[in-house]
Image 1 (cartoon, one colour):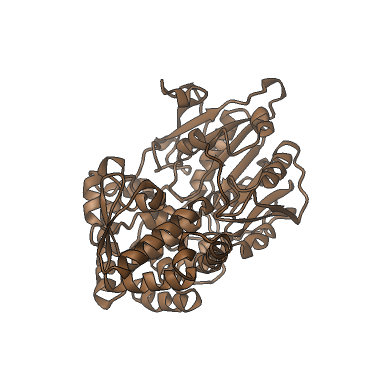
Image 2 (cartoon, rainbow, N blue to C red):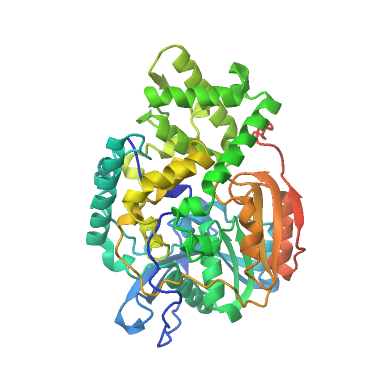
Length: 523
């Protein structure tokens, strides 16, 4: 089974045509909504969290025309006497729910000092999760079936035509079921929602920590509301001009953002650290050479995986490339990735075509590629980005652009270029989408965080993202994986200092807590 939705889970992206260089005015001013916080339920893990549903205008050009519902959660500050305000966050995607993100990592992602001074607030952006979600199919089973034979990226002329046909059918299905929600689903409108939430909780200015795509949301908010920013942490930052295509680059979006290059740089680190640690893959040969043999073998014959969750999944070359790029985003997955590649190498050497995997052999990224229908989450929200990114020029140009990217970054070039397929057929536009210019007027210092070996949002663009701001300051995390989350105590402390005191030293470099293949505590 091949699942197009996993292409957006690693982050980001597709392409569409911006309607204009500036967003339409949002008038009249919508009323500030009221938030009635309630219990999130009886589950012990949610005991400290509060939940709410908030109504915001569907169309900010006509706020009285109707509303859309946002799901919101709050983890209250632990020291109410010293509380500064609220810390809003977005985990990226686009299309990753912010409510579950905060409920899962809210107690761990920020230091006790940050937790003491701020309510941590997450929300599902409009069209995502529990916020009037967009859908393209009537059931999860139908969506899974739709993608059952769709390659992650094509390798033959027949597969190219299949990919084109799938993209056209998917765009039509999404327009038919959710066109009205997509028409108001731009990041600019999410930023307007964020501003209403800020005002609803009583904060004079916004304090925000955005990851990956969440940095584009942060940059958009800063552009629309420059006087309302207290502190912005842009973690795993994208170049907003590359994201929208306002820089004139007409390559596919993920290629413009350099995630194929980031993958190429990071896998070299995977090989290097694997050799140094004598990881499982190094036990059967040089890690790079073994991986190349495995991938070459998968172009000829896929491997059927029997997974610990009871499902089966056939891994071919395109699946394996997607799996590797996803696993590189979390250095905690590197040991399992090495083990899985070792298992594949042995299966191929023995002439077998099937393998039963244990939990220790199956990275979470592999399990996500074969979800149970009842666990499946639609990838449809990713279409929202099509309202604000420039197209690559149509489906017919994608094969050539993919081969050019492949020449720059073997394996990952095609993978990231074809990530844009769906939006090349997209016609729903949000007239409120903001696409630039991106020079910022925010007076407060802005902290831009870059992880040195990030396959999704490459470190090389960290300073670019910071330079849009009059006072952009860069924090470098000398670690592996996507964003700084759970990678460096030094970085956590630097972020704490900035959030609490609005102080940050430009050019700070923080070491990782440890190497990717270091032994991990049993806990």
